[in-house]
Image (cartoon, rainbow, N blue to C red; front, side, top):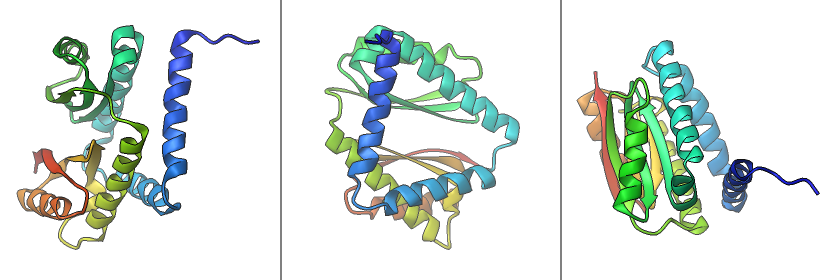
Length: 198
């Protein structure tokens, strides 16, 4: 029987969890909406191609560094999203020490300009909560995409435990509209802005 190294087992478990979340969604609509709007966002992104590549590099390096750290990979649930070097970190850590350790690692990554630390101290979210978060993200993206007052394609939507985080290069008016749309969607507990303004 083939034995996988511990880091590959962890990666397999995380990918399996994502797959299960997608399978448990009610219908394929949410998956289709997320896929279509994500592709559209890449094509209409207001960042330069160079900045988009830099941000992807930051996200990949953060993931790799957190995965390499056994304490963090085993005990935390973190997402790292970068926009022009401004990094949003969301998720859960059981202790302040682990939260601070994660932030220190991310802060040392080349290209990180500032960090929006939104790591909550507490238990990790369940598969049910993660499924609900995927569903809320699709609802928010759909509502933004349907709006005539804001370009939903330029706004990243990240949902963690029913908290919705919005990122993008937007005008003040677009930001206000996006927040109003998001806060009025059923199931959204709070909205956090991590915008850069044009």
